Image 1 (cartoon, rainbow over the protein chains, first blue to last red):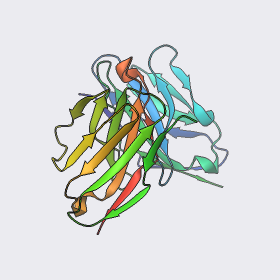
Image 2 (cartoon, rainbow over the protein chains, first blue to last red):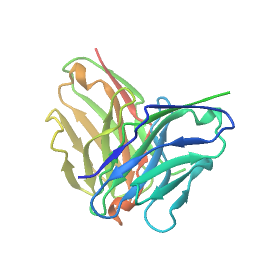
Image 3 (cartoon, rainbow over the protein chains, first blue to last red):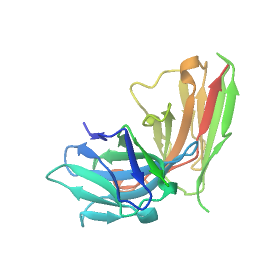
Image 4 (cartoon, rainbow over the protein chains, first blue to last red):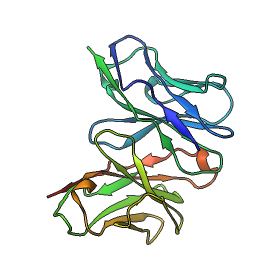
Length: 113
Length: 115
């Protein structure tokens, strides 16, 4: 079985400060890891994914994520947060033989001006 | 722009009155998914299609059915909605090749209210 944990329900940062949203995963075999963002009354938007290769993955809107196999983590980062980054963020994992995504519980990010 | 479109965005129905939600895609993706999302929780997968092959999740209530008449369209039918079925329903698509490697592309959802 595959699963994802997002240990923080909420993350609050000031605009211009670095933003980190944490994610750890559990999966048999090689993990395929994803980050999605959801704005109010909208669907989920794909930000980035890790399949294989470089541990640092760059995605949309200036976000990046670092895959750490030894710590089974895939934390989302942004060097300088914007107020418009305030949203709900989901980490998700799928296995190599499955279409299905297992989502974390989500982390609400609030960036204050 | 290629996208996943859900109609309507907001749907109100009465307790026990059948309702159908629709999803269309211009991405020509093989796989289509239906999720239920409540109160900013993680989306819960109800079922998915790979082309015409239907895959139901074990804990999806029998009250929920789906149809995929062609590649572009997929429908979610709720035969007798209960108050607990009030939620956001999200449709998503992905390419079939590579299985779990492909990101899913989501529509903006239909928010269903039950009176």
